[in-house]
Structure formats: C-alpha cells, structure tokens
Amino acid sequence: MSNGSLYTHIQNNIATVEFYHQASNSFPSELLERLAKEFKKLSANDDVKVIILKSEKDTTFCAGASFDELVAIQDLEEGKRFFSGFANVINEMRKCSKLIIGRIQGKAVGGGVGLAAACDYCLATLQASIKLSELTIGIGPFVIEPAVKRKMGLAAFSELTLDATSWQNAYWAKEKGLYAKVFETIKELDFEVDVLANKLSKYNPEALKELKKALWEGTDYWDELLVKRAEISGKLVLSDFTKNALLKFKK
Image (cartoon, rainbow, N blue to C red; front, side):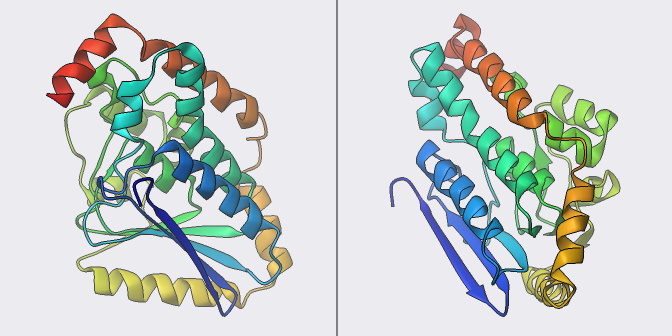
C-alpha cells in the first residue's frame, strides 16, 4: 500500500479503473507504470467498450506525482524516468482504443490535471478545482502541456501555469473545456457517470473506436514529444533553485 493501489472492475462492458494513494491520491512511479499498463491491457480487451477513470475517497482526485520521489531525484536519468511516468500514462490513454470517462470528484493538481485532460470526457463536482503549481518549485508542467492545451486551449493553459499559486474552480474548468458538466454532489456525479457509461457501452464498438481515433488525430508525435518534455523537467529539478524550493516546501 506504500506505493498505492490500482483496481479494475469490469461489468456490462464497462471497465472502472480506480486508483488510490494515501498522499492525496498522488502517484509514485510504480503506480503510474501500473496505470499505463492497465490502459494498454484494456485497449486490447474486446469485452470492454468504455472505461471510467476514478480515484478512491471523496477528497482529492489527484495531487500529481509523488513528492517524496521528486525530492529524492539525484541525476538526469532519474529525473527523466520520474517525469516519464505521466508521459507514459497520457500516451497510453490517447492510444487506448476505448473512450475514457474521467470521474473528477475533487481537486486536481499538476499531473492530476493532465490525467483529466487526457480523458475523452470529464464529469466533475463543485469541489474539483484545478491548479498547475509547478513554476513555484522551479519546474513547469511541460509533460502534461500538450494534453491540457489540446483540451483547454493555449490561453487557459497559460493562465493556469503563470498564476501558479491560485486555484481555478470547477466552473472555470468547465468554461475552458476540461469538464463537460459539473455537479453539486458526488451522488449526482456518480449517477451521471453511470448513465453516460451505460449509453456508450451500447453503441457500435467500431464507431466508438473510430471516434477515438478521430478525437486524437494528429497526436502521434506525442510518443517522442512527451519524452523530450520529461528530459526538460528532469534537468530543471536538479537546479539549485528547484532543490532549495523543494527543501523549503518539505519543511
């Protein structure tokens, strides 16, 4: 459990992928690797027509990558490997042949925003505020930028990135295109997620597969791009500025 948990439940052609980590549903590298493999596995599963991505508990949806692992990075190779975690997950999500519904019940930070942006359709609650705080510790949201910009546009990405200490509320995220609908309660959210997933599961699977391809057309170069972005972050995290910022944050 120190590396978190990941469970997949398949029923009525709907796969529900649920992750959890005690540190606000953040992702250590091992859990990111498991999630990437799970999307690849579900993509090839003919019994699955649609995927729901969710996190456990009723608080934070995802606090991004593991802070403890971030602080422990000692060299460029470790840094590149660490930041490639979300790169690999985003690439497997976009290449997955099944549509992915994001169930965003709470706050999303950094890589958590990237996860939501990599979903094909997101439903959220009022508590699902978002923030990209990477600049405050001397790095940037380089790996998730393509996914966030694709979903929300350059202006919204710029606002999130440059105003790195501010939360943007769920209605702002909906207005910018990250969320399709926002609900007052988790009960309402779960009802609507189930309704949508059941509808999609009954549509022509070939049509859904072709739609998925169309939605992500023009992103094949991301396999190479996101790795390059991981290298940028891997270099920056070794800088004196970032090391000092991380030490202050840890204290």
